[in-house]
Length: 183
Image (cartoon, rainbow, N blue to C red; front, side, top):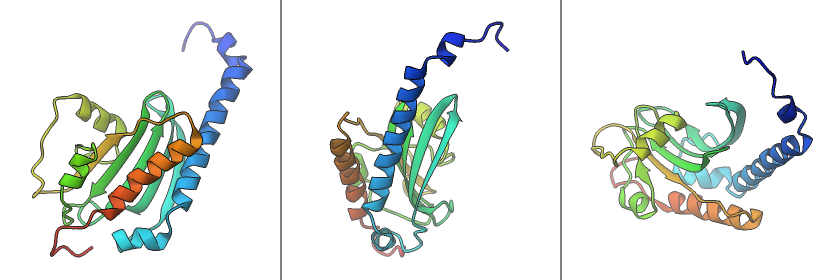
């Protein structure tokens, strides 16, 4: 435990209010984004879709975060998920996970600025970011699960931000599985 409390920070009402407002702004962004896609649209992309869910926390390596999960089937063999994470102090990230039995063409993701993540730890965002910082790893797309990850630079304007992120998700939902694979 530190020898002294940071009383100045503790009593800085303006800073606390700004952070809480920013959390509320991202929550509203994720609510609007989630509500802009029907469960039927998500099920059309992946038939086992379990809908949408927002989660939030304060301690991802000491930083607050908000998560919007779309589709939400986390099975490592046959699952699929689209996850948006607002990690304070780090950025906004979009992760698309396909279980090892699902095959989607890599070109739409590569052309869309996504990078392959570490499929062994698909839900560990700090590990994924470290993975991206290293020389761009390659993965055999024919074997195992696939995780695509992308940082999304977000403009300050709420409406532009919502439109940008909605377009990103729409592009993902347009990708069709490789023929012969039933989802």
